[in-house]
Amino acid sequence: MRKIRCSSLPRYAMCPGALTAEDGLKSEDSAVSLAGTEGHGALERYYDRYQEFLRYDPVEVGLRPSISEFLDGLDDMTASRARWYAHVMDGAIEEHGGAVEIHTEVAMSMVLSVVRLIGHNDLTVICADGVTLISDWKFNFLEVPEAAHNIQLMGYALLAIRDETVLADIPGEIHTILIAGGNENPFTAAKYTPASTIALETYIKSIVAGSLADDAKRVPNDDACKYCTASGTTRCPERLEEIGNVPALAMPYEILPNPDKCLELFKAVKMVETFGRKFMSDVKAAVTENPEAWADVFELSNTGNTRTIKDAQDAYNIFVTDNGLVTHEEFMETMKVAIGKLEKACKPVMKERSIPVKDQKMMIARLLGNNLELKEKAKSLKVVKS
Ligand code: SF4
Image (cartoon, rainbow, N blue to C red):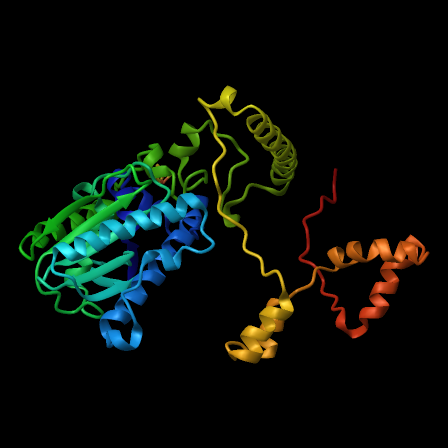
């Protein structure tokens, strides 16, 4: 049975033809969705811990956790948003008499006509007054349709009531809560009673039916096309035409043009890649140097912090020797020393010891002996005809 994600419902509502256009295409994580991952992770760890606190004797597990304990390693903006989202949710939980059960990332599904609707919202809280809070956070979206008009959330609400596995017997009303962007954005909420879910189911069924219809039309528009896997491929000629029918666009390999045309495109893409790299770095340098001059068009945005273990031996002692969290082999599997960096680090001393540059690599390889593993790199594509 075909599966439809709740997150795809808004797209199918705007462009019914997208369901067929995307069929069989692999979706890739967008940069935007990946950028919110760390914030989602912090909230997930916080609410998992909160659930532990509910389940066990407080004397054993200590005080109720605070979101602040879970923000290490996040950039300031993400940390501040995670704190705000937790603040909103914790306030809503208190308003409903406190949490009885907390679930993060629950995978839900139900049969809807001839498809299976699937989805997992970020947080589900069953409260003491019988209300279930269904929440989704959108870290990197400044504007999203408010909860009452958000079709993705409607899908989650329906799933929460109809899913027969994890959340069986949700007792009363469902309140969906949508929190997006930064602290300046108010959250929005919508309420569903068991009776109103009949209307919800009818509405979502109509979206699915429209998408499955033989004459389902593709309707290009930026909101729908942004995350559509068919966008920029020959699966959707309308979108191709709209964005200028540029030939060098992604397309499924089974419908690539003939080899000569591919060679032509290959060369064009290489040129664009080279130009793109240089162009991007030049624009970034210009904005860095004079942010005011570019303020209407670009700004420099935080992309998070890199996290590095400074002392590998110390980490080994903690994780392997002292706490037994991983075995020696598992730990070593995570530790790959880059040979290029090692060679570079050895250079000054080898120079002092008058080892000729041409012999340095070989000497390092000899010292490493069996510890140096050679693996063939992935093959690259090379042009054989000009
Ligand atoms: S690219 Fe846009 S128009 Fe084409 S199928 Fe996808 S959502 Fe519809």
